[in-house]
Image (cartoon, rainbow, N blue to C red; front, top):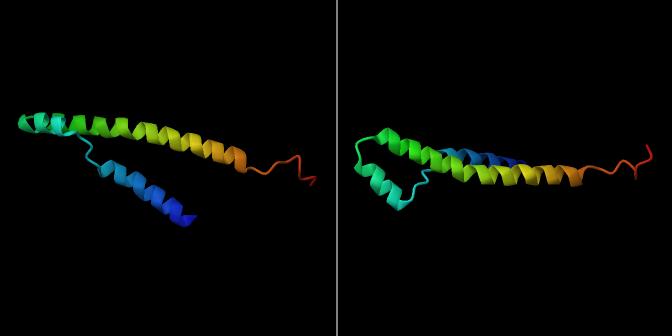
Length: 77
């Protein structure tokens, strides 16, 4: 279980260092003088890529918690 948690945290932190830019966007933005605009576009792409994965992870966690709880009606104590 600890290995899964460590791998999940490592994968999540690796997401922040990723440079997710398509070849066309990179070519257009690197040819310009304004590098802050290129960094902003890059951050936006990473953010848009991360949101669906986070939503799926949260929904999966909620479903896991719902079905992993012990049923109180079966335990008379």
